[in-house]
Image 1 (cartoon, rainbow, N blue to C red):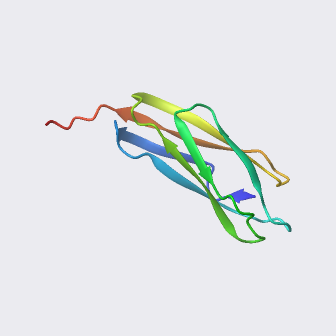
Image 2: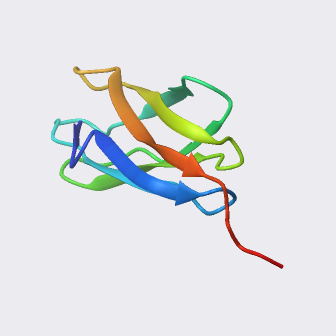
Length: 104
């Protein structure tokens, strides 16, 4: 299991805006890759992942959504557990949520 990247920096994002990222991976093994679980370091980060086995040389994704109602800097980890030899793999998201300055 090889990810195209293991860390994503959202930079500065406005409160209440969308903070979603898709970590793309490739199955470099000889057997179908099965993700058994994805754990996040807090409830503020919600994962979604490929539920079907990913065939040899094919790609899958682990999508992560961060709750931008929480102001300030953040750095969160996501642990991807699978039947791959290098399991678990740790992914990281980070950034800073600032108040939304939109006036009504």
